[in-house]
Length: 554
Ligand SMILES: [Zn+2]
Image (cartoon, rainbow, N blue to C red; front, side, top):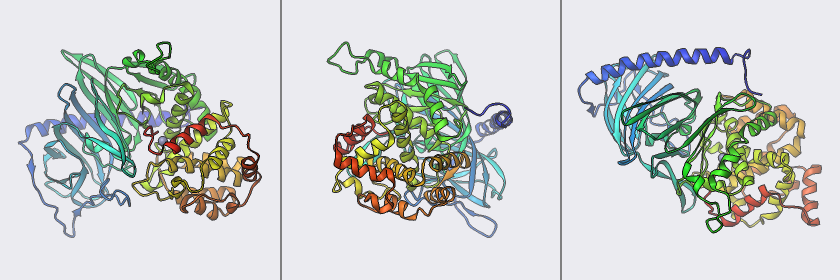
């Protein structure tokens, strides 16, 4: 099911290896020069003249104007980090390989907290300044001409910031760099990377990554991609992970702590790394029932189905799994209340693993994101339904596959189960605003939109649309308008009304408003006929909606 020899992957991999080797060589040179220089020079200027100008402090995201930066494109991050759990102190050297896309007098990186010690561009000390609690402005000694490749080395240290993700009005949960009893979990959305390394922090600028992370001996580090090496010298161990496939910055992780690291291949040959905190095998799902399974056992069981799940998704989406490795991380950290689709290495809250249906379902969701969210990333955050609607719909496809209720039955149960006056229907998921970016509505109405589309265009065209979206956008970014245009092109239908109603109009849509198909007409029949079963996937969503602020997010 996956890309194998003969389709170009081999050549790309070989090229990637050469590129990484070149980066390594380059890094040795630049870090040597950096070490030879004197202390950094805070300050600097952002001049502007005909020859060069200051790079923009954002990429133009309507919701997050200072996320990402203008004027350059990052190819690779080499992150050399050492972390001491006892003090929460991190010491880092970030080497950023980029190409100027404009004539730059200066450029910005996103970086929050911690202390910058020096910035070196192409081996020479650069002036720098910080502002807005977010922007690190770098002014090299010479302007960077458009098209020029340049290397920036930032040395820094401090205690990385833990932050809050907004999940609704007056409601947020912990995310970012989360300090645990034996290490740190690194996961968050829409922004996490700038808490632990200087970065062009927006999904529009994907890059490959190498993580070289040193921790006290006896601890594990689990990053994205492939484990290259881990070596112990005295009281510390250095772990090297390489993630060669372009990745949005918020998906980068180097989670640290005590883990059982399980390395294996799926039946289809995909290299997998699963990491479960051993403490979870001592913690009963029901603390009052010593006979109940542990979080670790349930998590292990669901992660063991990843090969099967990836083959299923690959077949449903009509596109091979987009990366060269896979796997998941489950840490024993009570404040971690979400799962995030970190590329090739999802980070899961243990609380999803209370039973196998819930556990399998979140594993399906996060692995579906590897296609929709990671490989096909958002061009702007307002298009978030393209991530969450698709990953939720994948759970529904899995439900049908497991004979736990069809996608239409789930749609029916939700449509009939959520009254028209529920505030959920007021969220305009095609432009949800920052406050409602991860609201239940984005997930639920997003998946319902796909079911309505499927009913409208028929199964054959619906799966052709998914396949084309996954394949043509693989490794890149997408927008809602592009998805609508694709759906119209493949189906040959005018779908403005459907998408306007479901994505861009507040209120519970009337099913006949988008042209009653046989299937949508059946929803109305089910509503009046009663007796329809409520599939577990629908029950889970209905429970989330009824509790409003239930924190577990995926
Ligand atoms: Zn999700």
